Amino acid sequence: METNRFKQIDDYLQERLTNKEAIEFEDEMLLDDELSRQVQLCRELKEAILEQDVALLRQKLSDISKEKPKSMHRPLFFKMAATFTIIVATSVLTWKIYNSPQQLFNNYYTRYELSGVGRDASANSSALQITTLYSEGKFNEVTPLLEQYTNKHPGETAAALMLASVYLENNTALKAENLIKKTINQNQQEIYTETLQWYLCLTFLHEKKYKEALIESSQIASRGGKYAQDAEIIASKLKDYMK
Image (tube, rainbow, N blue to C red; front, side, top):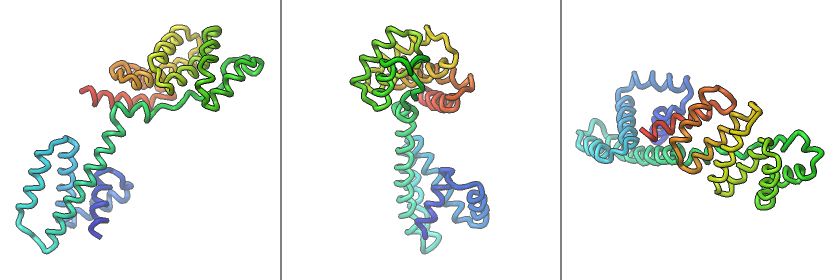
């Protein structure tokens, strides 16, 4: 029962409750001073962990242990508070790792979705071979073919995006960066502009060039296109990281 109570407190502080559940929980706190105190304690413990303030965390636990017991359940409450601290610490650590700049690439990267190498792809055996190998993820075989194709057809932006994806997944991000920048300069089709910027942003994240990634993500977000929402989140996280 007590474990469920602390899970409920954790869910409330992590904003995992529905609006109705949160309102009901807050109404319950108004009627239960002990519950309100437990929530405040857990909030302070969470803030101490988020701030990585170990000294404050230890002091908070020390202060709790020195309080005079108000009820026979107080020793159990101490144990639960310590358990909750471990739960919150684990939760926060996982959140930090997932949202760290190093993880942004993994969180948001997806391979360029193939829609055809070119207008004449259906009549071009080379293009058909490329699309088949790319779709099957046979990057060792498709890389030289894509490189040859993009050299012969510099205006084929879709092919360049495919090759950039291959480079990124083969951990040759610098090649992807140079290719995308070159393609942006040559791009004559506005429909590809945002997509090129998006993959350039992802490439910067892969290379840990966070300042460049922030610039690209902010520009994408300001235009309000397909990738704007994800770009806004990336920009926000990078701003927090670079403060």
